[in-house]
Length: 617
Image (cartoon, rainbow, N blue to C red; front, side):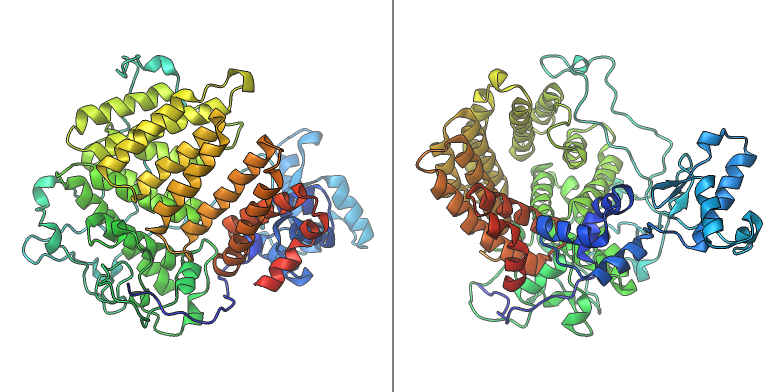
């Protein structure tokens, strides 16, 4: 198989500061808790492995608009807002202004005037003009900041032409009004009283939404003649080349081994990261067709609508992560192309819904292992809009997308229970409305048993019963094996969740066997060792080993912790160098490795882990 050429390991220049992911924590420590910058620097370095200089912290705080000590201009703006609150007749205790989230009152400004040897309040106000706008870091506590939402250029989806067999790219990426945001129907949680035991909606059920919102895409099936799969091709583009040509990233390989002229695997992953490498370091005239084969998965190399949907999603991630205008323009183009291929899958009647569910599962896996939680939510929202426009408000595909979206918005252990009755209702609807498509039914069943497992974990230990979820996952894994094969990503997801359920059920040895003998062999047939999803699997394996060690502090305790440490040192090394030290996945692995070191009483190694990381990268 043709793979991207190997190159010497290098450090990547990032588009964003690695501190961006920790903005809220740094602001809280600096402004609210009153920590010094040096103390914050030591804390971030020890906790997350980010070793930034004092100047980098100061520059980042300045770019965020976070200050602890105000200037005379800041004091003037604060006084102007305080005068407004007094003119509005607010009580004295309500006359407060937030400066970088920290309250400032009139007495604070009077002290500042005296300390700065100013004459009076009028003298301070003379330092600014009436026309100057108040900075964003200074505001009234009960007045939310006006957020300027950038208008995103949405190009209308151009349907495949029955005559030419080509997808026509949007002309010059012309800007049109953005698609209106459409709230998705809530999937979890929802009161179970709305659903009968057979999954029949009660009279109170309504997933319909406003009919007054305009549809910006003409998705009338009568106006979209669908050509066969092999006649639909990616449009040629002078700037982007032919992504599905012989040098395309997800082309079907010819089985030949050897170097290519494309970017290395590490280069591709660095560009795809949620803390992306700067595209400038790869030379002028960057052509996205220089990407090599990204995975070994047949799902991404078969030239199907599903593969092309995922391909354009990956192109979109690369372009949208850069700060160059031409990249942003291309990002809009590739997002529209992804939506177009999603529409093609919706209209595919053999079997309906099968490709949509599979494509979303693959895209979700890739987005998550790259740290793209927010981009994943954005992509799901776009697919939800296409589904709603074409299939209407109340359809099981849209409910499935809504469930995926809601999972991204939920918190940890304090989040509400999943509404199992509603998920069972979606499962029954899938069976009724997609009798010829087993894939959507199996995915609905997976969501159901997964939610059952998660709900049991939220109960008191004495009330937990993991048997139903475990038995459901065992049956589901067999169904996936029979329907799509043992190496499909959906099958791997089911096997991984079965390992968790088996462990919670009390059979730790069998759970470890599932991970080692079933999950990893399937995984390696889809992804190489240097792929972020492989790193994610190893990270989860290390976490699993930590849980096994906690549950059984016997003879295997030390062995499992050592094995977890070995896995994580490899993952931390790769993630920090390729994805970036500020990538959420990199920081998660760093924290887990530190925890495992502490469990082994390797306190010195845990405290100096950031230095080990620095030497490795």
